[in-house]
Length: 256
Ligand code: ZN
Image (cartoon, rainbow, N blue to C red; front, top):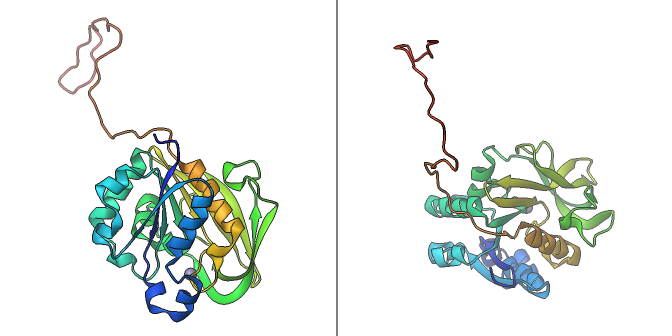
């Protein structure tokens, strides 16, 4: 394992190319802003986007990634199923995955969760207060009791996910809804963190506290080791004394 945690910031990168309002906020794509924020945190950061060959997720990239962050929205359906399978396999081996905002409907998140991952939403530039309900967790290191975002898209419960291993943040929205905005899951040998903020028409990833949370999550999700999947027939460690057992025709143990 290299000294620095190797992070691949993956972005669909479609809104920024087509929508002037989004381009103003993220002229080079939101992946560049997230990557620059993480670099300041001491990570070894690369980016990958949907329209690159293999979506920028080659075997070489996967084999050299400790943690991947994932942002997608309008083009979830364009992500190749074989690549989703490879990312899932790598998570099960140990790669951390940070799923951001509308990534709740990405193929990779739905695959890892096994549920619909649906939620309520509303785009009204309303205030969000993310309550830090796990102040002793590595993901909230250096944060206060809450983080406020002045203008956000609302996501509301019920969020159709399996019961999380840990709930890190609960959001309150000006319009009245609440949402489990930061949740963790173990999948195989890998750690998954879903983090809600990040709507493309608001400058969410320019917020230092948001970047701090993503940085903390990358540290938390970095694997100690990768474990290849296998299902071996195992030789006994000790000599097993021969058992004098006799199963009858019906497969039932006979008492002799
Ligand atoms: Zn959104």
